[in-house]
Length: 146
Image (cartoon, rainbow, N blue to C red):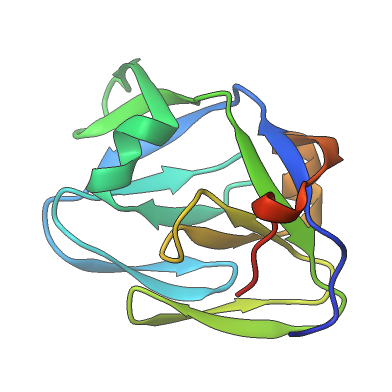
């Protein structure tokens, strides 16, 4: 296991952002490298203009749709659902694989777990602190690795 902090539980803040429904396969340039978005997925645009795909199968458990964005076809205003997730901070760069794609996290990035092994994502520190609130240290059974 790479050098990292202990695991904590963090609460997602109800941040509003945009989500574009994907109609054909495309590559999305994220801060952590290119990601594939498939029809039925959503491409999110975050608080700092960062973009990332969210599988359509996970979207409803993570976001509430507030309404369409005028003059942008298939684009919606959404709000992050408030929930608690397990997180840890990396002390060195790491790479891990999810759904067949390599995810790269620089030293200092947070790794966020939404449960299963295919639902773990890197998050740049300034974005993490703007969109999450650390609540408490995780219990042993809430710990995870990548």
